[in-house]
Length: 224
Length: 334
Image (tube, rainbow over all chains, first blue to last red; front, side, top):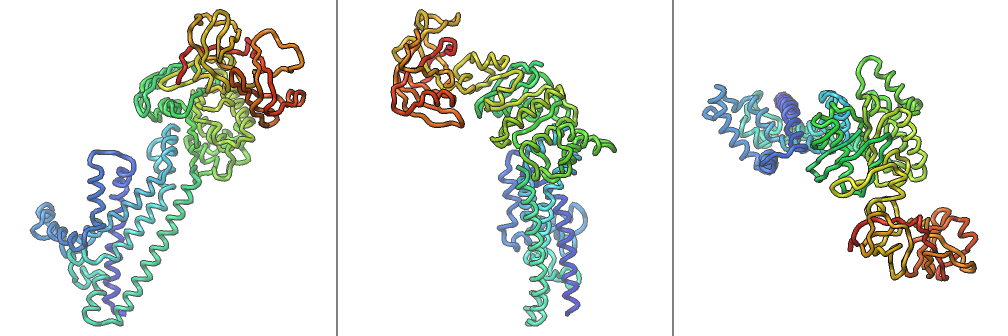
């Protein structure tokens, strides 16, 4: 197989890994707040976080390019432009996959029996212990499944990363863009190979996520 | 111990009552029983004593919610050990489990235990933090109706052995019968409290009587030496508050409406003639409806029905003995 394919796949996997790991850190408190707290303007906040779901990826990519580009506010703030760079790809992927991760995390938290948390408080146990021994053991299947979904979703993104990263082979050419370039060059045999690898990979990740969701539901049904 | 709590949300109520041993707070659903319990545990904002102002973590109470909220991913002993610290937490958890008679089930998850066993695991877990007061929300609801009575009396025995005051809220009169002290709650506050026999025998209001399972409750008008209802005069000793002409409520339990034989001379007072409209078995007893000047539910023990052999539709003579008639102040509701 074309060595460029492996380079592109490796870049995609790295971006997806970074993005989903950072999403886990960022998304957990956010999803907790959305699941259990009421605050003014909550529907608007939720709408903003869900926006990448319905926005054309090119629109999101366009704004991100302006934001991260040499003249953008991010560059003025930090002194470095993240456009056409690895960091820019990760940043864009986080925003792009946020709705997926957030929805999955929130579902996991909402599935948690509030009575368990209340009783845990009355048992005089410090909060970290409630988190470590009750919350996380019960919600981790949901959290991991959400993270896997975000990972798979990042692997499959095209429009946003094309806008933000372009298609610099070995630097910002992600595997989906690599495939597109192959088709443009009428190299269908290689494109078919690359596509089948991506197909199998995505299927495996989705199947793993479903297994985890079923596990999460199993706990839920014994809570009552 | 005296409890005095004022709650605004989610239900506005002010409750002031005593706790003596195993105290049962009886009330219909929706009056705020669970809210009051949660307020005592510190889970609902409220003002009052005891424990007012403390966060739930610092209140010395054990709270058993209706669904018990055992941690589904932990075994029985891990559940009990959850509030414990130190190297010997496992040994202490096992000791607590044996105190509630569950030493043989220490390694089972909540899903593998029966309702009564789960309740005792929850109790052991609550005992682990050495509470001064135990709060039980509807302890009868998770129990199998067949074994309910036995499981409950074991639970109450256990609490008495531990010497731990407990407040159980319920709408189940069976539980109320096991209490050391009975508190009845209505919308917005407490209606009556006292030793259970006193409350059972003399409910202060018609709502209390209804909660305690008085089947026959009807509005009456007070007369010189009794009350008038449905055009008949029923004689009974009047309580000091009753004035002739006043409206009031009369309560009588179905089991205390006496059916008498018609071939014998009738007793001197409070005899009603009518017919038996319905009769159907209830366990080993028979429940029926007497239709006469008043409609009365009746409950016949098996030995009475075996002697009288009553059938629906036949004429019936019943007697309301003055000592089983209970008069309560209050206007008719409808």
